[in-house]
Image 1 (cartoon, helix red, strand yellow):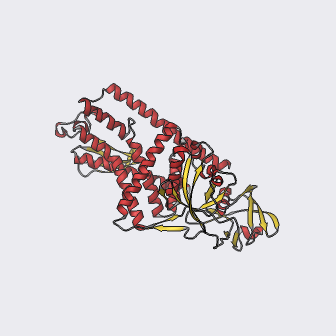
Image 2 (cartoon, rainbow, N blue to C red):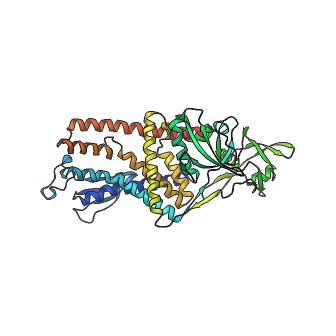
Length: 457
């Protein structure tokens, strides 16, 4: 996918999620009789606007489409005409103001439920949690895991695919560095074991570090060449069917997935391969060529991998599909699990048991948005649901300038019978701004650090 494609995916993601969040504030404010002056997708100068009548809400699309806002009539921000008396936000009962503030995050959660309901009804394909290569002496090796084992459950929670399984693995890991597993092994049945992490859990919680620290990976075919297409870099370099790739640019590879990742990372630069061909070891060089795919131009060498059907796990990819009725409670449960997990991760990042490198900025979000969008509607919808939960939880945090902080202000007024002083509110806003700028700076730093790390590797 091109840079413009990633930018489009980012704008689509943020605009869609902000629209639902702000619509929650908007619709509940209207129900409460509050005058909404403007509903804007984006910030800055409006590039499109619509207002049915002069007294109605002005709907805008603004020049900076990364966010949005709802502006309500408020006596604290200027004089209110006699005609609009009683229609300002601060003139409403405390419970109504809190309802308006809660509506934004609530609509994020409602969207997530609707998204997962649709995903379950349409059906989604998940990759079964089959264990790949196990590093000798690693925690996975000590726990008795072997290539081809299927993880049936983590703790008391059964898992059907790697996506949900990763969340559960991280959750168990940061709890006490011990991960109870139920394993199904071909020909031997099921057994239980405990995987004990040997490194700091905060480091293992960093993106991309979990499998490396635990000592095993996702199942992938071995790095053996299957078919070599004619007139391709692989054919021109002398690569043959049945060759086993031992090293790539001097790095040992154990799975076909590692081969694909390194080829894509190399771009169109020459790659030095060491191959096992029968009883011989062959060294040669191959230069990938950019090929057009649905995901955009990708470096390829023109060779497929060989898969031994006898050793390949059966039903590696499983379709999960539910009926219209049963999909609803499943979607509610899924949303609840994600919400709880997100809250726990926020709390553990504060205490230091989970790495703050998990905080992502616009660059990383754009990459994931573009990647999932290129893979189809269902995967992109799954990504939107995950980000929507994060947005809902984030806005409920008791930080001034966020909905949660404003709810705290309104609750204090409801208890004491008077609003907080302007001085305390100003101080709260300054603290909130400092925290938000700090989090945004950390997110940008993480994004840039990931880009630099990929470039240097």
